[in-house]
Image 1 (cartoon, rainbow, N blue to C red):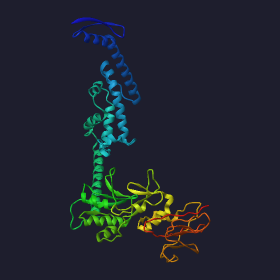
Image 2: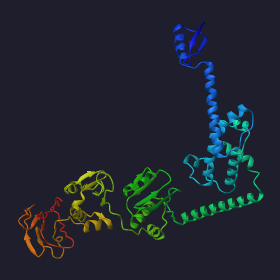
Image 3: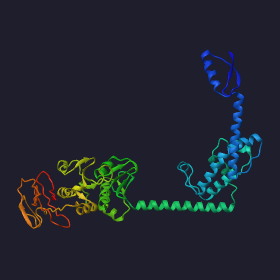
Image 4: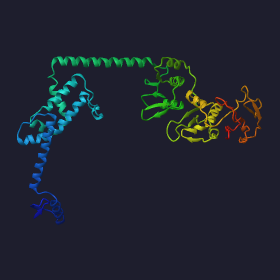
Length: 447
């Protein structure tokens, strides 16, 4: 043990008794030198307390709080405690009265208040703010606004007038009755829309509905057989919404989904009565597994998306479309090649929605004239294989000829197609043929 005199940063000296190894004493002496002496530390604490008290008094005046009663030291301490709690209580008042939306963290633990509960809570806030005993605020220094409201509410719950209580209870009972009636109506509507097959494998129900541009299947638990079935129909799992969905809105598709689920033993719920009837008897047009859609977002937004089942090997033919590239889970084709997409779709039985069909048939590249002969076998088309016509004249096209220069004003020829530059028409007619390799290439007018 040794005695040391330390000169603190405030300039005052103070004596200390230190124990332990010499190097530990040296470190402690250095640390003590960077602190205030005991007298200055006490004075700084008093000044900080006075500053907090002054802030509390200013806040109390702004909120219109009553002056505190008690000893001088109690009042000084209580002012610093009351100020932040009073601000919290005023903030809670705005939430309860509905002046401001309640934060999410409060909604989770403190539901929206109505009727008697709302009145008692507002009364509790007012009662707490009117407390002027310094010792009361000191005793609640560790509490937050919500704890104070709950404590005062419990005391005031029995002090509300009988008339107010009866009215509030009647209002609460009416609300509870309305909720019960709504729940009963919902159960009845759900049961009415539910079809249960004879071979039902589970009491749970798969609900099928259309939302915006999507057909949605909701099922309350994981089922491998349901997963395999809906994935075969093209549905994909939406992790954000916990549902199976596909970007397709078609009554036949809803009916097909419901019918196939029922055949697998699942109870289904379809709110449209006609679709529910059709699903029961299997009255629908099966959805095509070969589809032409459009990418709605990402790098290839606006490009055509061609998709087909994995077991069908159409990739070598589809890849020959100009600009085509695989973009999981479909083959992307630039929008400028809409004629090729339309011909490929018709040739290989791809389904187009009405909107896509209008888009493909109605769009034309600006600044160019296109004319394609009708399909082989259609009225006006040449009967000989390997021959094609354009406009009112005819051109013999050898089977092996793949291309012919169009720059001289003659007919542009590709495969088994003939094109006559300069023919004006509302929409181009289309020649659909296949040279065995699925090649569909266009010749365009050279200006």
